[in-house]
Length: 591
Ligand code: ADP
Ligand code: MG
Image 1 (cartoon, rainbow, N blue to C red):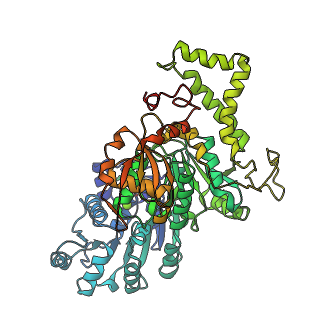
Image 2 (image 1 turned 90 degrees about the vertical axis):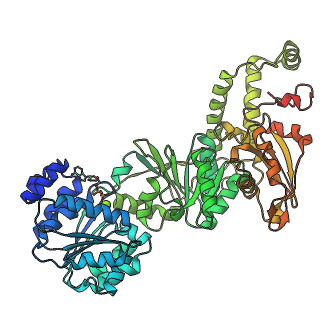
Image 3 (image 1 turned 90 degrees about the horizontal axis):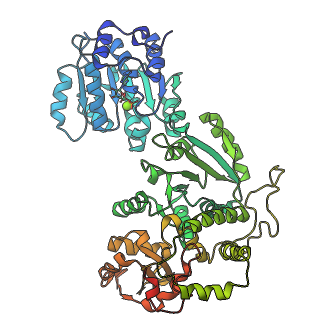
């Protein structure tokens, strides 16, 4: 059969005429496959396709052919999650049926007068489009008889469940007669829908139009096998390796998101958690910072990340694979939007390989094995970044003959190579000093590609986790948290005693001043107080913190610029400005 044009699909002349007028020239893929199937014989049906693929016409056109126009009682019920969607469906069906005689389509939804809707149904309608809650109200008032329905169509079934209509759907499906024909359309097939299919549908035909490939062809799927305890470290290494990484890390629980974000922030990365316990205002603030690129990584739960539409994300990272494989598609679809490329990488333990294979089968994708870069590789990468940057460095205006002389005097005995080596080594020290050298890739059980750099204390990562501050300048390239020029140091009477860590304090400051994460520099936290750096713009806002309450206690913030010079050596690119060249207090930091 030629599924390439509507004439071939078995539709009547009236409908074809309307389609033609509406500018529907060719059926979409889901339409081409679904319409003949539904017209062929009465049967239950599952149609899976992404939004925007034309599902309304896929079920609407065959339905119009199957309805008996002369019979004016509701024969078909179409359920949709929201008023807007119900209205859109109603409008499309009205358009499709404009040349069909005597067909009434009624749209009912909450938030509008129920009596008017009752009258409309009473006047006679063959098709009712409804949101579940209102439909139940109408049925309880006797305005519509569920037990004489012939067709029940669940549109956007996954979304209806997400919106909490599970019980309503159960009620409606149970009240409708056993002989009814049920068509279900959805973008995904979570467990709960499978359960409904089993309970209410009989041998449904199923058509699935590449629901995953539509968004996924631009996504590279990868996995890395590591130990569960190495996951955050692996994340850090990936971020170190690729300073342009910008993405979402998915965790299974709220607590995980908080923990991972805290660990990243503690080591100087711009990351924040997004989970359901945040207030709307907090969520908005986080998303604003993320969109503005002030956050490199958003650490999110599945639920909280639903509907995140941020373009240009380079990576989606699964810190744990989702329990439900449908979610994998949801998650990875956050990257590679609008024709861009993206990487979806799963950090898994050996036992999870089974799940990866399952995903490959279910989704028709293939995964490539990735290796977590060894410190040596990261170092190499950073040296190349850093030298490129150095090559572009313009001589600073302050640099004069005297300064050159001072430097040259101390360095004159060295060759050019020596000096380059020294510069690089200063960079490397930073990376190497406190990183474990262990190979994070779990190569046990005969994985072949394990000859990399596992030398030394493999797996005995002694110093992981703490004291990684020294690195922050290194990755400052994109998140600019590591800027030192023009920073001012402040004291605040909040500390660990207040159950705050650096991330918590950063959020508190930002949320109460309207500043963004990159207005704030280094934070160091004590039991009772903290010191933090703020840029020029942020300085003007610090007054707003004074007198605010935290846990009932009044906040005090003071300028504490004295120690400021000390902060300047955390800067990116090995910059020693402000420290080395003859202590012109403070001044040297302005630039
Ligand atoms: P879905 O329900 O899958 O999200 P819709 O049924 O709402 O998608 O259709 C999306 C848009 O595409 C609508 O504006 C619809 O009018 C239009 N459309 C659907 N099928 C066709 C087609 N065959 N030719 C042209 N436009 C179409
Ligand atoms: Mg739709």
